[in-house]
Image (cartoon, rainbow, N blue to C red; front, top):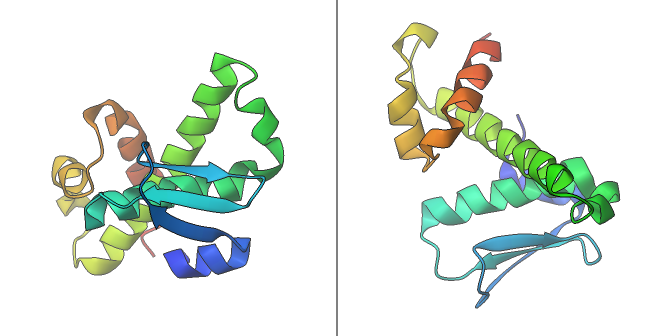
Length: 131
C-alpha cells in the first residue's frame, strides 16, 4: 500500500491544518483536506487517512453526500474502510506478527478505532494478503 504522502501527491490534494471546529473534512471543490490543529499525532493521521479515503473514492460523487442519509452513511463507511485498511497494512508492515498472533483489540486500541467498527476490522484481517 502507498504511503500517506504518495496518496496525497497522487490525488494532488492540499492538506491544511488550522483552527477548525470539526476534526477534519475534505472539500472536493478545492481538492483540499482541512485538519483541526488541536489533534494529537495519532488523531491527525487517522483523520487525514479517512479524508484521503473521501478524496480517493468519492471525488466525482460528492454532491451525493448530502442527497440522502443512506448515501452519506455509505460514503462515510467507505472512507472508514479505506482508513482501517491502510492502518492495518501499516500495522502489519511494522510488526513481525503472524496472522494468528494478531490481537484485534490491541490493533483497534492502538489506532483509535471505535468498537462499532470491529466487524470492519475483522473483515479486513480476513481478506488481508499476508504475502
